[in-house]
Image (tube, rainbow, N blue to C red; front, side, top):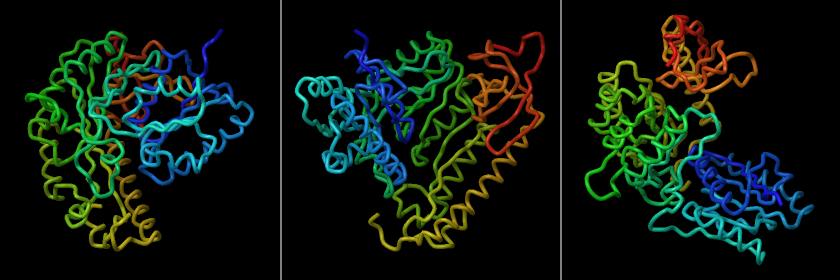
Length: 423
């Protein structure tokens, strides 16, 4: 008898992608193999996101398409997980009456138990309680076969309570994984051929605050920098208020720490930042950016900006740019968003064009998705590069000369020096 089939569809952030991988690992032990075809599935799980309203609408639309499958196969189990499951709980059953299972963000490790109960007795199950310790945090990353980079979860939850964010309410308060446990996982990944890890958490800069002793994020990065085989370290996401001088210094001291940081500013107005409860000023943000560039002149800095936050005036939007009062009209928000996106697109293209003629160290991730005979990889500054190459380069770091630039990627040529450029 063959394995039962599991189909997982994921919406939202990389944390949700990681959770979906953990779901698959857990259910494999219960006899489920994964499938890319929902029509072949015995169990369908939709891992949800509630950060953006559009994502929630897509989730309900997708669940509606699964209704016909349930009607054709009453034994099919359909469940939802993730942040929207945590937020809605058993209210999901009223909107999606053919749903069998709702799994909250702290209950993923109990998934096999819940699926087994549904298989035996039927009915409905909803589990959205928070736990003192999130059991699924300990489940290691499961990169795809042949992958050269992967994400490693180092913590979950957040203690900041920014006014626009639901993470502390849906993911809970901060919980950090012990440093030795993370190192063991990364050493295993390196032995399997992983060359780049991205450390994942809602606010990685505050890693270690829930652990005993003096462990912090800089200590973790330093330890990972000594793992043989790991040539590149990245992390996301960083809160500016917790970006310490010690962490900034790591960009000049740890060779495997890539010259890239994602540092969400959210607004260039101090008044709006106070309403957002961000805990820093625009000037403090600029000072940290200046120090990052002093320590690491080649660093790439990416960010997030919220346009149309309640109470935002035109003068708040200009500098750098649901319960609160003074909402901004939709038309005004759209105009500000278009202006910001146009400005950012121009800056990005300008910076990409400045790379033309330079040699870049590129970690080759795989073939170009467009199907042509090209490889795709990333620079240490996290820019995507397409270049002619062979499949044997996957997992290798090659020296590429940049010959052209576009808004979202670069084009290059591999340096030919008798193979000395490949390592």
